[in-house]
Image (cartoon, rainbow, N blue to C red; front, top):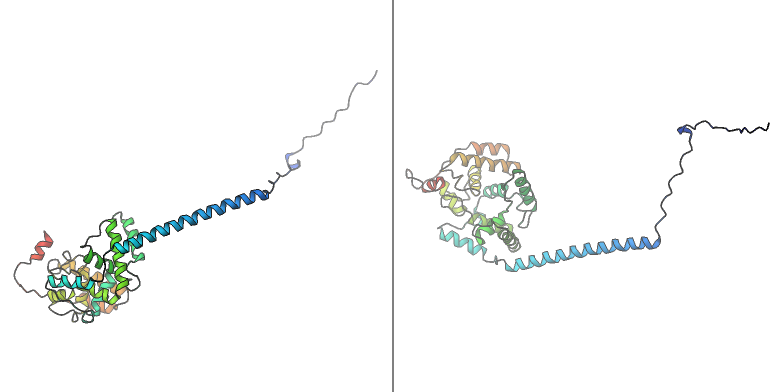
Length: 293
């Protein structure tokens, strides 16, 4: 009989470990020269648009600055304005040469540490104040320089609580710095600022509290006077002696931290007994009644 059987061989299954690896995926072909040129062209157009936007913004900012500079009042009459306030309040105008350097050091250390480095606006101080305000969740620091405070008091009637007034205050500070020396600005500030008890200017303040000239005050007295400019009613030493002492200590600590005084000098000043002069001993202090009202 014919043999109809067939030989069928079945290979054993190949272990996955022994299977040949799949061929690697084919790498995409390189972009054509035309595609590369198109991509480069898009990048160049994007860069040009970005540069044009920056240039436009810079021109707008420069135009606004120029307009604000022209619109802001002239500061050539600054000294005359300061002296007019002193005359109106029967206060003397005291040249910087007749003011103890201790007062200047105390004021700058407390109110404007970078007074001699900035040109009217302290960018570092503004950033720090903004950060502190953000952490506190409320406005606790203003970041204003002595020059800005002077501009606000003389030209803005002490008000810079709106965005437009704050910008004007900054422009005025820049104009003041461009027109006057640091010594002149410091003299204007010390003769214009209010120290409480009806005393406008450092000459009137030194007489009111200590019955002496600004050139004669010692470190303890200078620190107390410099501490008054922030809140003259709340830190009035005749009405709130504990608050005045605490503020004086803050000023001494700042002077120590910036290297104006030594630890021994700060300690002696903080322990000094201050004697205040009062022209109306035994009578009621009207300024204390105003502060408590």
